[in-house]
Image (cartoon, rainbow over all chains, first blue to last red):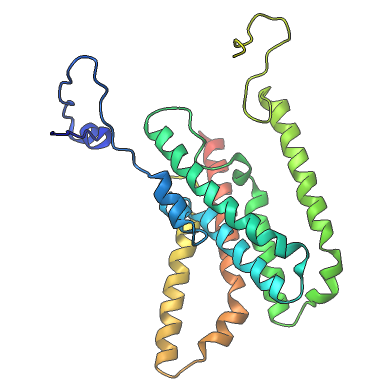
Length: 195
Length: 67
């Protein structure tokens, strides 16, 4: 049995036309990413995201995982002990979904955008600079993080408030429901059929 | 982040690797103690990454404003 593979990207670059297919047969397209391989690589947190070409996410997952283990080992069991499995499993799921999204983009479908819109705001860069400086000052002895430790729940409040604000802004801006499904006026006749 | 040819995290990753290579060489030559240095100064990588993200964002916004 002979199998021919057709790579649309190389065909587009070389300008060659795909080989003619027998009627009724679907073309075989080699997808750029393997979701299974991405999930397997994520057994080491961040590696699956590197495979998907999402370096920023790889950094975040790796340091969230290592940081949670470090803080748990240093006596901050709550909430960081709970975060270890959460970060680990979320990292695997994210790698799987990222590979699927890359494949969907490759096929010209409506895949997940390559970068989240919120990462395009200055909040992301400013947060990195802020946390970097806080940790650096702590390392240099200019800031006592132990005295600030009791205020860490304020961080949860800030993050939660940001998510609420972002969701409200997205709903207001696009008229889209939070799960990116279009909304239809009740009884307008535009609703998709219920299955 | 989305500007073609420039990736803040890629630049940060490259700079970190170069720095680690230089420090590792100096440590192998007996000039420095690498672990205390890294333990103290690693957050500079976060600061560099964040600064590059901000610079990239401002550059993209200003180029969009010009066009």
